[in-house]
Image (tube, rainbow, N blue to C red):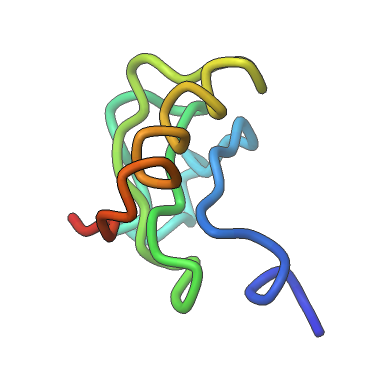
Length: 72
């Protein structure tokens, strides 16, 4: 099934700042980044404040409880 079907969203701490990494994948907060689109893990953005599993639950609980869609 792959990663795509196993998460709503993902926060990563694997660095993608090697010199051969395409510029569109390099972000300011490396190695912390947010894969915000489970259908396209190439889409990444800065992650300034989610570092722990607890903080992930704090972030997603709003959307789960409110029923509002998470969109960028």
